[in-house]
Length: 118
Image 1 (cartoon, rainbow, N blue to C red):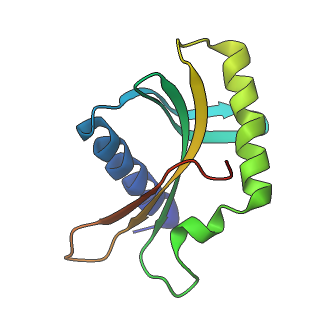
Image 2 (cartoon, rainbow, N blue to C red):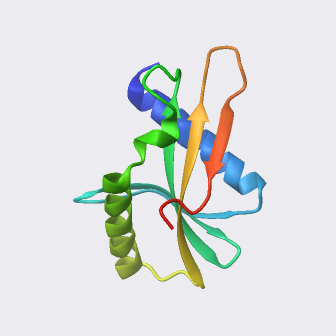
């Protein structure tokens, strides 16, 4: 699989994981000139911007480690663009990271990190 295919697979797994837990997926791959938000969803009354990181191995580190302070600033900035264009009903905002490990012939492993940088 190519890198974009692995990323898409991880996002599909993440969206299914969240939906199975009762989250309402508002949008996937929201794009503006400055970047992209992977998943925007409602967890009850909380609007959540979910960054999905997918890896096949941990040779370069665990997937969630790729979301550093710089990446968090970018996500928050992009979230502002989303909120200017859309106004879903919500009480709170949050950024989560969903780390997905996909290995051949094994079920995916998912780690959901809630409230990153809060």
